[in-house]
Image 1: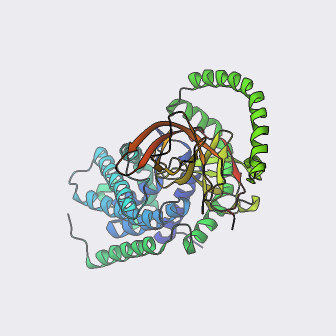
Image 2 (image 1 turned 90 degrees about the vertical axis):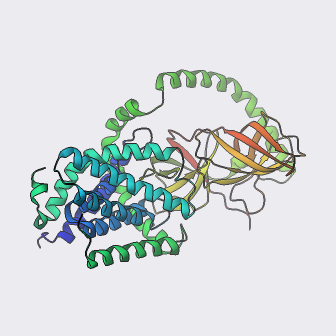
Length: 171
Length: 274
């Protein structure tokens, strides 16, 4: 059995990211906030494969996060799919190819995902999402996402090798 | 920016609708979502245990560098507190014995007799939201949803989700946390609610004709359908605000138990009387 199908490879990436987030990354916090590998994967998949890949990978990343947390079920799926679509949209909108642009796209898309998570969560009645802590979460997740996006983009290139683009190859 | 194709739009719309349907259907903590969460929790827990053991030394160094806790100062404060507490132990033993006698007289079971499960805190929330912790005991140890969680100092939370070997605890500081409380020495009762602050919670619905004062102690009331037994210590009242028009007082309660840097907790195997 080969694992060349992008669906299987993205599946492996999502489960690996969830395990790493659960067992390792969530243990290392700055001001009570940890990096969000599942969110970075959603954004990177969008940047790599376009809006539908970003939406699908984001949906399943968020769904897995929903299984590991106690926030309303489906909230992560909705927020992370939006982050994946946002990553794809911003990536397509940029004209130049540069590392700082990749970092900026990752940071902005991650912030969009976190904001969507907090706002929709508050709308459906979770009182723990919109407060002063949100600003800290936004800043630290944006910062860590902008660094983690490079290895995660490389993993997405492994998952989806047919989508190689000249711009991506120059990074 | 290229316009998304019709297929892309359809995919995104379908996923958004599915996510919204999940959000709508899920009754948080019940139904199929709880089953899926329990199953995934049971699969991930052993991996988390192994990884936790391996990375503990690195995590300790990391926490030392990035935690906002001043450990030297905290150590000194703890040393002083231990000395003070040693002096109070004897006095407390006498008071405990007297309290037990009084509670027996009025037919209330003494809180200290409720069976408890000692559990280690494995981690905080996996995500960046939610005032929750995960503990290393679950249904296999007799833990059930809604059981109160305490430390030696008082109430810290309530079990909100249980898998075979793990449980998630909502901390008392969560905005979603409510507990009925009474003020020791008065007949005042009210409802306390977390506010996302690690040190205090707010109490409301107190009858303003009751003489509640700063410095008095708030404990769980255990009234009505409360999932908490009576007399679990919550904290000290640090502020009283009267609303004359509403005949209501609101209070700020400074928590006895710290909810930051929790290492071990006890889950009370308390079930509300039927």
